[in-house]
Image (cartoon, rainbow, N blue to C red; front, side):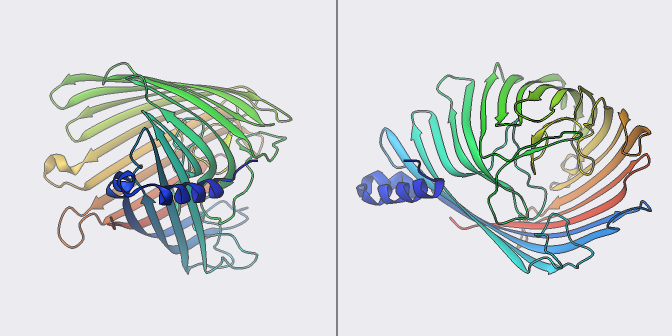
Amino acid sequence: MRMSPLSLGASTAALASLLPTPALAEFFADSKADLELRNFYFNSDYRQPNARQSKREEWAQGFILNFESGFTEGPVGFGIDALGMLGVKLDSGPDRQNSGLLPVGDEHAPDDYSKLGLTGKLRLSKSTLRVGTLIPKMQTVRSNESRLLPQTFEGAHVVSREIDGLTFNAGRLTRNRVRNDSANEQMTVAGSNIRGGQDTDEFNFAGLRYDWSKRLTTVYDYGHLDQNYKQHMLNVLHTLPIGDNQSLKTDLRYARSRKAGNTNVDNDALGAKFTYTLGGHAFGIAYQKMSGETGFPHLNGTDSYLVNYVMLSPDFASPGERSWQLRYDFDFAAIGIPGLTFMTRYLKGDHFDSSSGAAGQEWERNTDLGYTFQSGALKNFNVRWRNGIYRSRGATELDQNRLILSYTLPLL
């Protein structure tokens, strides 16, 4: 009999209730819970003459309640995680919806929406199995958390660290709940010029990460979206200390994606990013190249693990596209203002066919300014402003602003 994630979580809870009190000591002692309050204002202004929707503007309040238990004592430990989320509309309109903050209604966005997730977990030695609601952060599948509430999946995920320095993970996802929806749905492929995508309830993944030292890490990930595509991804991370408060970080990425079913997926993605850090300053440069008949594929609604996946553009990953990025970060703690951070970057892509048939070109500029209060009644209260400008030849012209206020209240 196949057990659903919810049934497994309930069974785990029932099992824990039958265990003797001493076995539950770590279960309760290591439990933690917090409530995140997230207030989000979103404004997108589409400036091209033929825009189907000239503006997307919404304001919403989010509540994210997260509980993580410890594990029961003994050779095999059991635990439970729970996630409750609520999104409340503060402002929207029929001609301003579809910002990603709220569900899209026939005429109006609903007044609120909610999500509930339950995860049963099991620990044996240095390996942990989780079954139920998951928020994966891997090369092949990265849940989107860039709006009011995070994207979640249903499935099973095992992570093993039995060998020092080596992390193995594998699992299967069966349902996808996108960031602004309450319903779990089947998964499908997203990406530029990809055709023939088929809904499915099976995404299998596996990966290996090895930390050769504190400075060098290699990662391999495999993903297979049934009836859609297969993907192999490699990542090399290296940090080179140069002197006092100086370092050079290298991030190399390669992904090979091919059709597995009725799609036309055919993509090789190569990316390289270099970041030089000097005190509170960080100077970055990145280059990305797409090869093949389609753009880079990923699960619908997820973030893309490409070096030039940023705020507005669909990851600068059209078929054949070349793109580069310049980035600058500054941490004001270096001059005595901890909690204040600044980032700006510029990206440009070309060598692809635009929707108008002309030689494609696109560029994007982002600015991010944030401050986290360090003490007093507002300690850990974060204020963040994000601005993005995107232009492409003969297509989208977009200006966007996001204002995010967030505070996490520890409960346990």
